[in-house]
Length: 317
Image 1 (cartoon, rainbow, N blue to C red):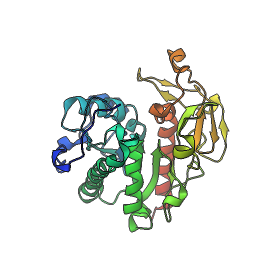
Image 2 (image 1 turned 90 degrees about the vertical axis):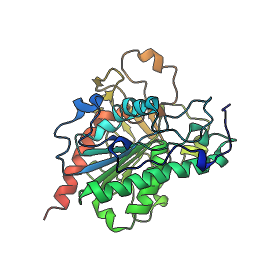
Image 3 (image 1 turned 120 degrees about the horizontal axis):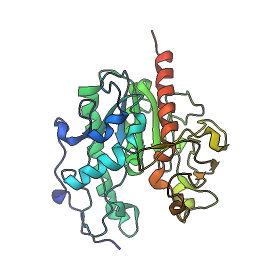
């Protein structure tokens, strides 16, 4: 059970002003120290990545519908859990832009709170949309774009794709959209489709990770029928072996290659128990959603570089 209250936009945290650097978790010239090891010439790349972080606002005693992005603990959590462990995978390929936003509380995905929670989710998306509009006007300067996201962030990213890219002029600037941790279907877009080869551009990839041979209770509702990319081979192969896996970014900030196998089923990516320190703790975990990105961190890093290079080859004068 969650403490809750009636949604009221007037009691929501203040609207972020994205002309202020403090309302961005990461900018190319504003890199948190924890991210510095992942950066190289961070503000000189020819492509950008716009990253939207997942739901980190989960306190069941907090009755607020949307997170206060000015709160120090929330800001630190965004940087330490998402910027460092997730968004960093794209830093080799592109300049990272990552706005703070009034993320909706986790209970918007749980009954009986979901109906009222729609307004909180919409408020969160409006922040993301305004941040992206500011980015386009003031930062982009015509560069190609990667959209990357996880969980709640991918719900917002899906709307961004629909509103700004799909069958729009900006579609030509889309390197790829990595819409991870939610159910995404080709039917959600008019012209943008799933990418079925490692070097393909202009479309999206998506997956939801779970322990091998297990299914979540809401599999039929939340996952079945969704596009499931193999984030190791990046093609239509349904299985991959340990030798193909480039590496997990673990909580100790070390990369562990050849650590897992995967199998693609309808709407779900099954993973073996990863071979990392304290592996036995993961043997009791079924849902790997929290690690959708860092399980394949090195694979994503390499793939983002490949797709970016391919985009420039395809669009060279």
